[in-house]
Length: 425
Ligand SMILES: O=C(O)C(=O)C[C@]1(C(=O)O)C=C[C@@H](O)C=C1
Image 1 (tube, rainbow, N blue to C red):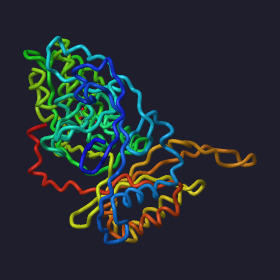
Image 2 (image 1 turned 45 degrees about the horizontal axis):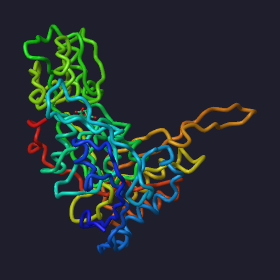
Image 3 (image 1 turned 90 degrees about the vertical axis):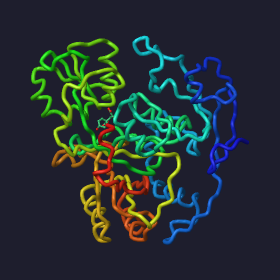
Image 4 (image 1 turned 180 degrees about the vertical axis):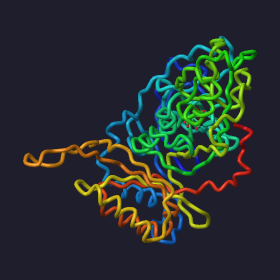
């Protein structure tokens, strides 16, 4: 038995891993061997004012009860989950370290799907997975959410989810919406496919720059590359600055800057942060090119375990549900009424195609048939699951839904706008 963190105890089953590289080993070694991790909760007592339950286990099972009608969103996922959701040992092999950026040592390569191997928590520094490479806005968000943590770059959102599930990271910080570009749908879908809990949110002011190699002039730029969200947030400025340039999507903003530097591209510019310019040796051709000065991205903080909801500070709760079959249209109205009736404000509503049944055929041979789209709804509301009104609202919502899952009940980001670290990003 080895103690992993105060809240868990874990049995470690060692599996010999011959091709573990030095670089990857820091994420996943125990005495030079790969491990699979089986975890059990230590019971902790908490008191709830409104009968949510009296322990961490109770709160977790109350999440599970609400999720019990899930038709099974997980079956579309190939993820091997280790924290009590699936107890098989995982056999994803590590691959040798990738080639270094431009031959230069020391630059961090993001985790990719083939790098994932279960790893126990070790050391005292919290490891926070984010999508992108150093200099990405997500790295700044991870730093704001968890100061003094170790940021772990991942090449895809899905990898960041899996890094937490496999104990390679302790938390993930991922974007879900931007004030100009709208929702990051991929992460809504992944929230449903994976079993992580939302434990907090952070909002980051996003201040974009146009970056190019030193000496390159704006009128020489024939191509602008960046993350699609960043391109959407700067569309108006790019139309003015580089009207003839081709616009191309890239994995993340900082990776676009890194790509220009690594390939010595004199005709290409990136939309990225000032920190990315510094990290990859690019010059800033234009500063503050976001189409709205108050451009902000909201990130979710994800963990393997939920936090205990409280009432002594403003909390938000995020849920996801699907309407009972054949009752689609009126269900949304009824659900929204359940919150309105209890004076609970909604801060966000998002719909996504139903993962198991995206289309339903309605009608009959006489009048003809048509295809109805089926949706999964994501709702954020301003209340804590420790409040009776939130519990009652969800009890009512459950009556109209085929499944309902609480994704998390967590403190709202109340950082005053003026103190947000805009100069860092
Ligand atoms: O590419 C980055 O730098 C990211 O962190 C990703 C991302 C996003 O996915 O929305 C994060 C914040 C900004 O809105 C732009 C891009």
